[in-house]
Length: 218
Ligand code: AP5
Image (cartoon, rainbow, N blue to C red):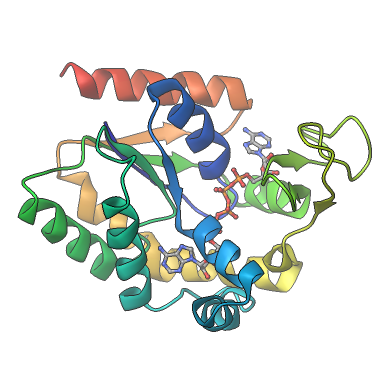
């Protein structure tokens, strides 16, 4: 199954994508995670991406499209995948649709997670991520057993550089201007689903699964 997850920063795309990827045995492909990995390695791509990410701006389309097409060719994605954080602009979506159609492929489901602004800010301000394994926690909603220590691998939990108040405000604005128009782009595609992203992680997962099951057997 080929799935695209849309939604504003903090909507829970990463949280849900990990669980869906496990359920369907497909890779979760997160452009944010790929870029953060490059930043960690201090590669040329990472250094360039960081200058945009730290301000809450989008990394240029050309770089992102190249990253995604390369990742899809790397194997492990033949049964499908869940894209988390891509596409992020109409130009990325158009390039992706055309790359898929050249391969005689199409997306099976586009899920847009809808969450209120106040809740997005609460989720982002309390998020903590493991530097070792990438596991995600929230200081209030999903706290680790030991303060600042990952339950899964014992790694250190940190706050993401772009989760500070000022950068979050810009990320939400960039989302409104550059990413929200994608809803319009995909709405008429026949595979678009809006999912209520308010409530518990488990309840949202159930809604996601219902949307995906409906898509498999229309
Ligand atoms: P990216 O990493 O994609 O960030 P984002 O889209 O801003 O989304 P987040 O990862 O912040 O949030 P999420 O929706 O995944 O929520 P999460 O599950 O973590 O991108 C970062 C940057 O990279 C961009 O700003 C840009 O610069 C660049 N970039 C990436 N892709 C790009 C692209 N395609 N084009 C150009 N540039 C690109 O959840 C958040 C928190 O809430 C967690 O703590 C979680 O535990 C908690 N939580 C989740 N669900 C719930 C719930 N139901 N109830 C309570 N808490 C919850």
